[in-house]
Image 1 (cartoon, rainbow over the protein chains, first blue to last red):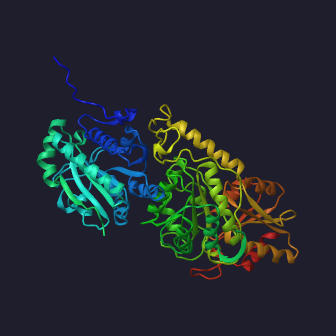
Image 2 (cartoon, rainbow over the protein chains, first blue to last red; image 1 turned 180 degrees about the vertical axis):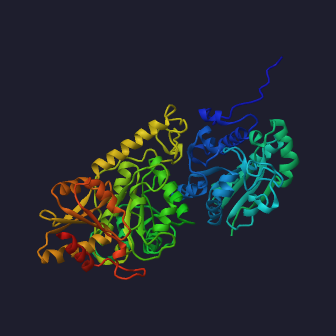
Image 3 (cartoon, rainbow over the protein chains, first blue to last red; image 1 turned 30 degrees about the vertical axis):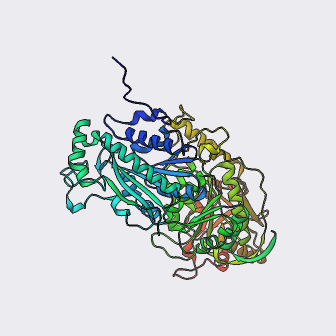
Length: 251
Length: 366
């Protein structure tokens, strides 16, 4: 039988000990691969600096052959701002979780948005705080059971945060989209989104944002396959995949 | 360009930073430090540097961290409440070996406090106010000239040790105006910033670099076997090197003194006047003024304690500096406190005036 190559390691992917931090069925390694491919295709590896927040995503750029720094829980967009303002020709990308970006880091994030920083923020959305065991996040769905919503999230504590839609109307935002990596089609689509989000920075247009839906079977207490099903049936209807802003001039 | 100029302590901090080649400033409005932020907004872009108003002091310190990561000579300034908000980021920068200068023009706490003079951040500045019990050098100017000179020294020490350096000013020092000799000070060479993240194509070896605020808790490509305790050992070495080499203090009339005042910043200025007034009465009184609050001038205070002098600590708080004096004295001598309750009026803006210090000296002199 002929050998069929089902997986080719991206050129920029570095297999460090941090890879072992991921659980079975986690989407983060797929997202790491996606980022590595886009950086390679854009030919920007030599001037890319990756900043990671606290969480399972905190190893992302350590797995990709670019300059990197994991920082505290929340301030990635502020740190990226400092780097980009000093090095305007660097490509500065942050990788943050939904808790990191839209809860504790919301102030830093929204102010970087309002300042129209020429950076790219990637926010993975798994609807929970994954690293700490699965507590409620701003993105948790109504009815979703987490460690801190043991009977399911109730509207009395608010509704899921839609970050990609929230920032799209802001003048300084050049690009805002939501992707997913639950299927090959969505993988390709999300790759295109990330390319666009980074190109806005390369062309010095404005702020680029990409939210990526990401399965967390461990904290959802599901098998990897059940997770994919839950994602299609519950998560994507709440968080539609698509572009919310794509402009070549902000004013 | 050397020249003399009349300016405030806050302006002198900014002018000193510019002389030291500060290329990046970020800050958030808070009284009584606004003149510093405004100076940078006005002057830094003209000199090719970057000014950025932050979203908060938690923002300031993390934007500052980013600028330091990129290799800039970077600084922020704030006042007490903002200082409190910066603590996590300062801890991050110590842990990641990042140099920067942070100016705290102290105001009154606790809680809402008020915008007037006070010296209530001594402990958070000298003890590593954030998580993890880190150390940072703390410089305390007592004149407008020192605001200019110590800020320059702060940049040098930050680069020398790859560590944040704190300039602990206060509302009085920040707002009083004095004549300043503006001059770039040369403290010697500093290590190259070959650790800065600038993109691997901009590096001779073309290899990527990583920095990490939790270095040691996770394996790094450069240090695959690095352990947490290995990281702590390196930090310990850095703290001990700073403690051994960087103690600075000033003395006034202490050789034959039977009573030694210990004070820093604006309180040290008042104490100097009190020494003159009591010396005129024939009392042998001197002043020891720590310039570095950390590392603390323990040794000279210990020496004086062995000679049997009494100490009077004067500080505009309920008593913080006094802890370090008591530790230095090791029970060998009397240590008294004249704190903020000795101010001349009960409302905000009260001062511990020289005549009040004189009265206390007369009571204790014996």
